[in-house]
Amino acid sequence: MIVCCKTNNWLLLPDGQPIYAKANPGKVNFSSQGIGSIGHLTGEMFKLQTGVDIVHVSYAGTAPSLTDLMAGQVQMTFDAPASVRPLEHARKLRVLATTGADRDPQAPELPTLIESGLHDVVAMAFFGVLAPAGTPACIVGKLNAAINQTLNSTDMQAAFAKLALRPKSARHGTFPHSLPLNCKDGLPLRVQQVLNSTDPGL
Image 1: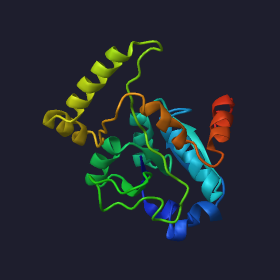
Image 2 (image 1 turned 180 degrees about the vertical axis):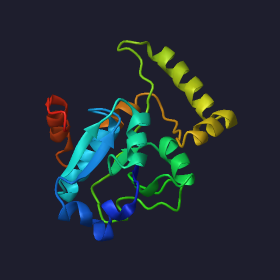
Image 3 (image 1 turned 135 degrees about the vertical axis):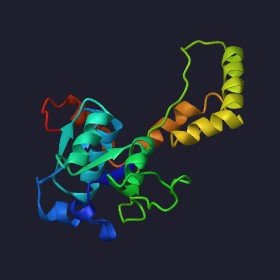
């Protein structure tokens, strides 16, 4: 995920402190691709860790979210690199940081939020392949081998690179065990609060 804005005046991050947003509670809006989306939950985690009062504005997808960001209707967003980087290159948006644990090798010039001082804000979208419970181990093994072979192919690596995605092969049975690692420091409770809320401003 990437943190971006129309201009960085809304969100300066010296030592991890968003100065304008802290000095002007409730006056900075952040857009997302929809309630419960990765962009929404990343924004809520950002609020938790910084203590800023920024207002969530939900959109029906990435395109209208970024359109209103470029038009200045909202001030910041958290979105995927593949959606944001072309607009950055066209100088329509300014990218401030990435939300991964490490710098993105496809955008090494961008600092992480960790490097900006927000040590507990790590958010990454990921995809995995799951099979129904009870699938025979031999079938799972064959699927795993075929998927890994495809992921490691030159063509697939190039296709993922265009989408700013980093494929990672894994042995079958290991992927589910990595899921709890994405829940840190009370975030699951906040996620539950967000998803159970009927407030359109969340």
